[in-house]
Amino acid sequence: MSRHLDMRLIRESLMALIIALVADSFAGYIMNQSVGVFVAVPGLLMMLPALIDMRGNIYGAFISRLSSSLHLGEVESLRDEKVRTGIITTKSLAYSAALVVGGVVGFIIYLNTGEPFYMIFLPSIILVTHLFTASVLTPLTAYIGVKTYQKGWNPDNVGVPLISSVGDVVSVGFIVLTAIFLLGISKYHTIFFIIILAILGYVCFLVVRTLKTHDGKRVYFQSMPILVGIALLELLTGSLWESNKIAIILLILPPMLETLGNLSSIFSSRLSSFLYLGLVEPSVVPRGKHMHRELLSIFALTILIYSLISAFVFLISFDIRAVMMVWISALLSIILLLLIAYYLTIGSLKFNMDPDNVVVPVITTLADIVGTSAIVFSYYLIF
Figure (cartoon, rainbow, N blue to C red):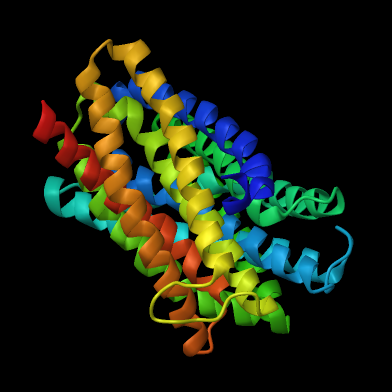
């Protein structure tokens, strides 16, 4: 059986996926313990899926681009100009997309509550949150991508799950802390506006630097429309979270969705590298020994990781129905997401677009929407 599986993929990805699982279980715990903050700040929970998804869309795509450059010999070390440009571009994308999401959610909450305060407050929360998360995640992404390659590992197998696991805990933790902090200082209008204007000035500086470089300008303008579009789609996920505040669902959402996003991203990242190297030919029906081996290996990883999730859920709930819910939603989701990832990757090449800039952001967003829908469907089907 092992000859039909990519054992290197399984060996390198499994530990990263387990680390991601542990981290996202902790993220789920933070969400459970922060219900009071979500109640105090309308719209915060609606923004959270978009914020979490951004770290996969932006930093996952960055590590995928780095991986392709490393495989092609365009990057050799962290000091390369291409890496420094990538770091600045990634920060610019993170801030720009965050401002759009915060502004849209602020306007929605204003329409619902009649309070114009939220049109400034919610964008401020997501902007300040990114000041911390981007400072941590961007250099960490570059480090993981280059160092794993230098150690003989494939960054496509390891990088996305690792940076996603760190990103979820950092994003959830910082958005809650930021909301508490800004609630505290919002009555001091001068201090509040000085902080926000200073961060906005820093964002403008980064965007200008990005647009001055050829690679940065290309990535920024290719990625921004997609990032904004899928971030707005994540508001559908946020709405589902808002309307289904059920203990077992909130607990398992982060590890379940993170695993789906990681598996789909690993598959799409590796597929784009295979297409560039000529190991896989684009076709209407996935075929070839490399393609079949990839699919079998991803399914093997799915079984291993969701077995751990099932054990975790059973230890918390002592309810076999919760375990059934995990498996039904997992199988429904992963089959659909792998098909979508395949056709998105070959489709982006046909339209002369870089799959590293397009597929990872789209597939991680769809993983949240598909996964959340499947979990809610499975819950009401079984319970």
